Image (cartoon, rainbow, N blue to C red; front, side, top):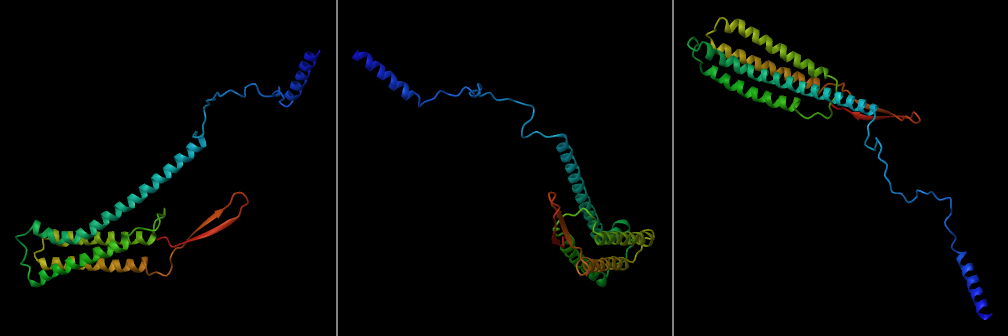
Length: 231
């Protein structure tokens, strides 16, 4: 009898302590322990058709801006070479085409060579300081005053070449001092055009100022940010 009571008491205590650890609920997902990775056709790096169209449009716009920038730079370099090589060509062509017919260049004529050399050097430094400095921003529009000055210089140089071809090359003028003075007059006129460029580009009263308008799409609030002068 004593052995039976002890066994029953031990069973009762064990059943009471085991109630503190309930079994896992039956509602738990049967696949909670699986580690399978699903591979689909999209990921965080996927692009939609709208994204591809937008990227293509941005690339086309950037290519257009780059072409316009390099085209403007090419025109400026070609025009600059034409301006600086024209006086030298005026002085060199008579010696290359009819050297035997030219009159002797005296002291005054040789002094004009020094004048041409220094004026071309001054013009080169002035053009570099005014036109070949880094811009503050790249704008898609054409700068009207700069384009006007470029057209004026081109027409001016072409006019000098036409007069030089008709009056000097065709007739093979023998007065070399007059040819040198003609080249000096061209350099003087180019210097005056550069003074005009300084007035139009730097000293004019009306300067374009730029502002950015930002509108928030959620509530339509608009703010303006002044950028100032970007030329």
